[in-house]
Length: 138
Image (cartoon, rainbow, N blue to C red; front, side):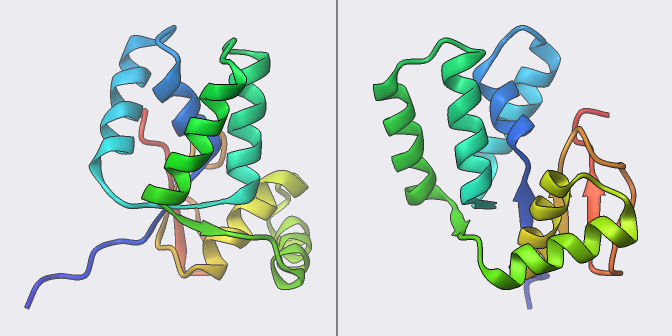
């Protein structure tokens, strides 16, 4: 019997490092992650990455369209729901994260993810005894 694979949720910074080579070490790590498996993301992540691709990285609208289409082909996509938004508020109160970060965490929990790859959150922290935050760049 094969061991079960972790269900992994990606934060937006993984994509942004994958698209930008200003930090070559993080760029290579992010590229390896993005090419390695099927992950879970939310529409929030697609929105944040698209916005940063335009404003910070200088990508064109056709690049954004290509990114969005590739996300829907490669990844499991979570749409916001009332339950996720309410869970984000509870997570924010309990763990003192920003609402944005709490929404990412709530989306990962809603999809039964075991791991959340993020550079910005508390690496090593376990949320609700279900979701471990890992900084893949450390």
